[in-house]
Amino acid sequence: MPNILILGGDGYLGWPTAMRFSSLGWDVTIADNYFRRHACDKLDTGMLYTVPNMISRAKVWYELTGKEIKVSVCDLADPEAMRGLFDGRVEYDFAVKKGFAGPPDTVLHYAEQPSAPYSQMNYRTANFTVTNNLLTTNNLMYAVRDLSPSSHIVKLGTMGEYGTPNIDIEEGWLEVEHKGRKDTFLFPRQAGSIYHTTKVMDTDLLWFGVRMWGLKVTDLMQGPVYGLETEETAIDPRLATIFNYDEIFGTILNRFVVQAVSGYPLTVYGKGGQTRGYLNIKDTLQCVTMAADSPPESGRLDIYNQIMETFSVNQLAEKVQKAGNARGHQVEIKQIQNPRIEKEDHYYNPTYQGLIELGVKPHYLTDTVLDGLFAVVESFKSNIRKDVIFRGVKW
Ligand code: USQ
Image (cartoon, rainbow, N blue to C red):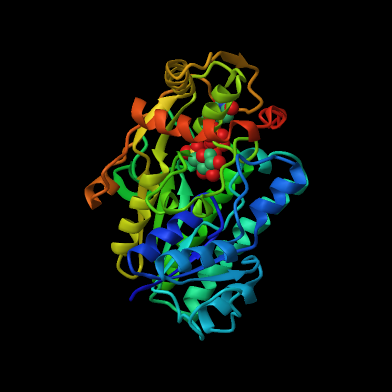
């Protein structure tokens, strides 16, 4: 069986991804330092519901499916913790089978501080974001180079690395003709937060490793994800993924649905013309599994834009308002002063064909999909805390 190591395996995407690979028959190991849980506690962000920790969830998964997910609770910014997962020094915090899982065929790297507002709170959160994200990526790159050079690294990047340029966004690369000569370069990056800037730097690190040492890397430039149900989370409520709706860790569509259910006016920042590429969490799972099945040759960096459709903030708000009103909520939309520094009215035309060509079948944001999301959020309505929805972290 192929063997996958998922860094950041406790997260919103990491845990559902771990269950998906396990379902598909891969040997799965997850590693995480619980940053997200600790930060949520410290900042008192609340969550829609509580979720068991990695060990408890891996035990439930084993009881229900007979499949093992090995767990390591560790800080991957520590190079020895990272290297232990490649050379066998790791001591698993949960494992059914004794002994080392072996060096991974594939490493899926989600293990980053993922919030733009968190990175913009103050110099300490900015520092943490820079050190955590870059050290983890660098530790991974060196562990693969030194201990398992044939491992395929699948890195979660972000569409936000490109920013909102006034030209079409290509899939990772741009051919440039200059004074009669041509070459191909990484598409220009101009990130809009310290968090997004660390993702640009990650790309630069890994592109260096590809050129110098022949690493095999796939970079998935993902847009904001929405939703909470996957085939595997539906098996048992104890397998649910972490769901944030607060300003720091919640992403826009998940936040809007929670706001609609709790009677909080939808928080459209500024003019609401900010346009991004979105995808359902189910499609994140399709994309990462297909990317893992299609490794590049040694010395190649493959880049895919991981989005399924684009919407402006206003369009999302209108969709949520329509779906919410149809379920008997009285959904109000309110334009508020934008706490971020970003273009509110801009050109946006990204290409995103690569993953479709690999075989991904998109789940679009239909009324039925929104209805399903509303139904789940409504069932947790009594847990929603209005005081954490907006705190106004300024850029
Ligand atoms: N926005 C609002 N109102 C809100 C929240 C957000 O108008 O209440 C706007 C933001 O100003 C922004 C857009 O909605 O223009 C998206 O914001 P977001 O908070 O959903 O997403 P973002 O901060 O960009 O980050 C999220 C994830 C991050 C991932 C990124 C993909 O947290 O991990 O990398 O989406 S992307 O946006 O393509 O860079």
